[in-house]
Amino acid sequence: MKELVSVIIPFYNEEQYIGDCLISLIKQTYKNIEIICVDDGSTDNGAMIVKAIQQSDSRISLIQQENMNAGTARNVGFSKAKGEYVLFLDSDDFFSPSMVERMLNKALSTNSDIVFCTGYGLNVITKETYMMPPVGKDNAYMKVFQFKSHPKTFSYYRKLPSNYFRG
Image (cartoon, rainbow, N blue to C red; front, side, top):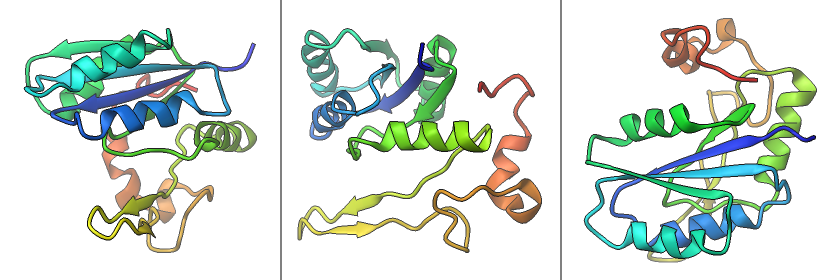
């Protein structure tokens, strides 16, 4: 069986975007995913939107908690994740249909514990898209790199327990 990928999406007052975000994940070419949405104490209708979409896709789960911050929400989602790989996404983003498949293939083909990618931003006023800055200063998009060549990138991860990463 294919590897299960857990997608964790913390959100707080994102009713304007969470629906499009989830639809872009439902349409992924790689289907063996679980989508864990963590409502960080929203006061808008974001949770209701997630529940409505959840009705049509059993891969979506919703966890609701009091507002504690996005980092705590990510950790709560991570504690529930069943996947061999975990993907943290933002609720106000939408994703290319092949994103999960391409990132998983890169992780598998390079035997990597972590895969970063760049993305496109949307100017909400002009509706134009633009390329987001890639990880690192040398256009590291979909490249394999090591701690010694990107110490600032990996400094956040060095402090985590060794059993934190899956895959």
